[in-house]
Length: 199
Image (cartoon, rainbow, N blue to C red; front, side, top):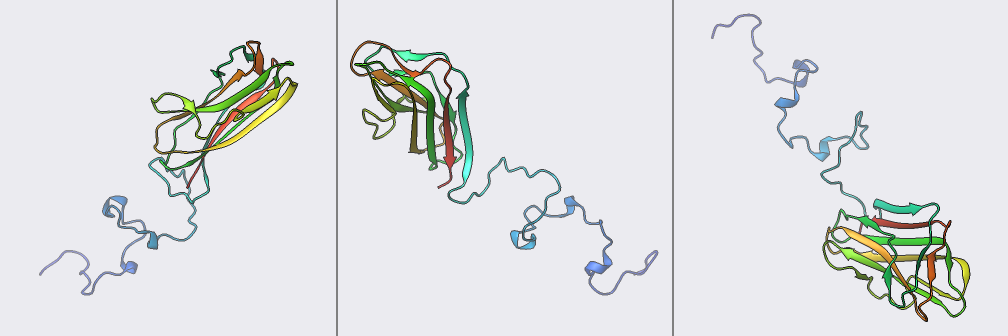
């Protein structure tokens, strides 16, 4: 068959016959380049967008949320029933079975002689009602029997059962009498931290 220009090769093309930069992205089929064809430990020049998901090893931190106040006003109640503290921290799990670490601390709680400051960590899942974390007892969050000006810490864990948003909040009360007890004293700091761990 007649032709114009250079006569085509009679053998199959090799990579040497293709000039550099001639194969465009449009010419490569979707998903044609498999993991086996990608170098180990590749260097990515730009930003890696993993918003659609990322395979994460077990035990790795997925995300952290924190509520922190450096100098609080009084957070107190005279209720003998558990009441909300107003200290809240929310996190939407990336995975439906993640381990959720819940940590609360305050530098100064306060109760007077005859008082018992007690509390529990509550959790709200999605649009459900808020309730105490599973297994919470009378001293789950804090116990202070007439002790003035002491710090307190709580460290708990919760296993997600869905990707519904989780909201954690300390609840507290005076277990003995209708006199004010202070989960956080004025000018003290507090933090509530929620961490998602891959399981």
